[in-house]
Length: 352
Ligand SMILES: Cc1cc2nc3c(=O)[nH]c(=O)nc-3n(C[C@H](O)[C@H](O)[C@H](O)COP(=O)(O)OP(=O)(O)OC[C@H]3O[C@@H](n4cnc5c(N)ncnc54)[C@H](O)[C@@H]3O)c2cc1C
Image 1 (tube, rainbow, N blue to C red):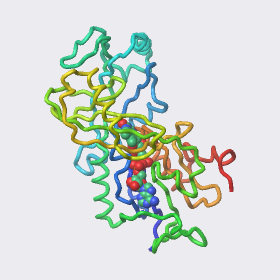
Image 2 (tube, rainbow, N blue to C red; image 1 turned 30 degrees about the horizontal axis):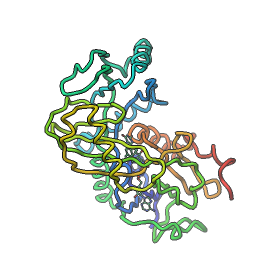
Image 3 (tube, rainbow, N blue to C red; image 1 turned 90 degrees about the vertical axis):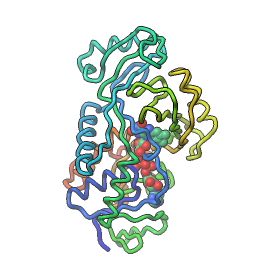
């Protein structure tokens, strides 16, 4: 069977790329092993301003509008809302943060991301904020699991999805690329953190980070906002919320741990004392495909240019992927420059 693209991995990266290429009339086959992936565990948060100094994310002014339009378009295609825009209450943990935010409020290019500043202690119902808070706007989260479910059904209906675990030794490169009976013009690996074992791309400097998230049910009602207090809480409805996420660079596996669970529950105490009376509905762990230079890994193998990678979206897949998907599709179909091209590492990291 001939096809234009064989995409390996149906996480957010592989799903959006397959969707984009199909929209542009390409033949695509997407393969996934069906195991829980980082995209399904992720909170899907989009937060333009982060860190103690409230710095805008690189590229936010073009990444955010592209992401919002993209998810809205997917939403109207599938008649389902995937991106939930919700304000974020960023609770101050130290006085220096108030000084930083006052500076940001005076900067024109930060205005569209910042709302009300309140430095009165504990002025929100049910929320502890002894130093006050800033309301952030243009924030929200992507229901990634729902989006992946809809896209998987679409791929299955269009007979371009196959569940299988691809063993690298089963991929033939010469004289033509082939896997089982499929002969694609190009293979694109969208394997998330699994790429560290990929014989063609393991030389890329990934810096993987494990994360854990709890879904909790609770009796006290929270305001319908996202809360960011070092960790974050996203209320899914009045009685159900997600809390996360931990960062662990040592234990790179997808096993939920007691240590992470206890530290997340303990941190809830600093947001709302009654939130410690909770039930844990779900405890998930997975690995973020972060990279050493904090930029994605996109491009072609230096010796086998018909094998490509689309990966390295770290902790910001929901924000970054729509724009990078469109740009990579442009590069594949119209030969435009590849953004965040892995050729920046050919000379320093690739050994033949
Ligand atoms: C705890 C946690 C919290 C996060 N929070 C956020 C957040 O709030 N906001 C945000 O934007 N991002 C967040 N992220 C990051 C986000 O998950 C990633 O940026 C994004 O999901 C990566 O998508 P991906 O498709 O590259 O990888 P994945 O989602 O891991 O998908 C890769 C897929 O490839 C499949 N695969 C791999 N190898 C093979 C093979 N040989 N054969 C068949 N299938 C294969 C895997 O099974 C998997 O389904 C978080 C991640 C974690 C772990």
